[in-house]
Length: 409
Image (cartoon, rainbow, N blue to C red):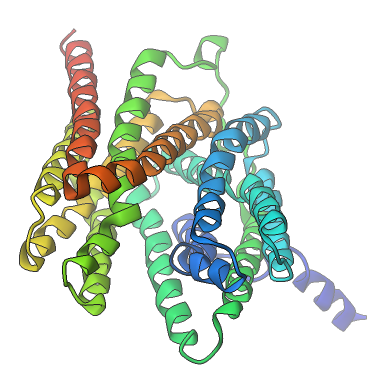
């Protein structure tokens, strides 16, 4: 009888994570949910090729998740927010994602595969927004209590670390198994993500605890145009990475840089991203410093694309790639900090959905445009990316000006 009761207790969500502090719980959640993307991003195109898809079909399949993210994330996050169950929505999305990738392993033919990827993306697209909303809500709560204050960056960094480790492990495994095994590695990562999310649902604090009683006037965004400006500025800076993500490594290889060095250059960017997430919290102490860091992200991105437009040598590329910690991570980090200040926790999931959709829309547009630009302009196409990131820098300056006026008033 006691053994049966013991086994029943172990089947309850939270049995393995009980007692972990909130920061470690959320860090583990990020790590688990970034495993599948860590395999998907570098290796899914190769798997699609092994399934017999043409280059054009592969491009359409890779673009599908961006489109689905635009369409699915805002309504899913809005629904989760209205039902006051962001954690449950995250759990359902992660389970559906795992089921989808398991099914993908049996998929053949362009039509079947792109439909499966579209279905998976509807579930997977909102995961990061829901996860960020949960984390920022707990971080906000830590600011109102006498306990230790949580640092979003030091929690989020474990997602990037897991992404890199998953990519390295998958690459190592592919030395021993055929590329057709990629889909099963992605499925394994997604299953781990679903399990940890299920476990988290058993120990997560009730969302009512994280939602202090508010007056009616506190149930809406008090400065909506400022929030929209923050999202638009950040989305422009993030979207300007579209050309680099699509043709950067290919162009470096065409210029005679060995594939091993190309891999090292790409890894350097991820390393600076990890360092920024781990230590960047010390750079943000106020809304003013956060808006300055957002502007630094826009300025660094503009300088980065202008440098790449002149086809720098492999040595200079080291410095250019080291700027990724600013162009991507500082932009994302400062945006999340500002949104946590100006958006009530009750509306966090909805606004995270807007932010995710805005970044996805910009990336989708510039990724699609990159093919035409690169074919016609070569490395000079980075001038266009510099103009896009410059618009984000201008937006960040305007946000900072608005904040300065409000502070002085």
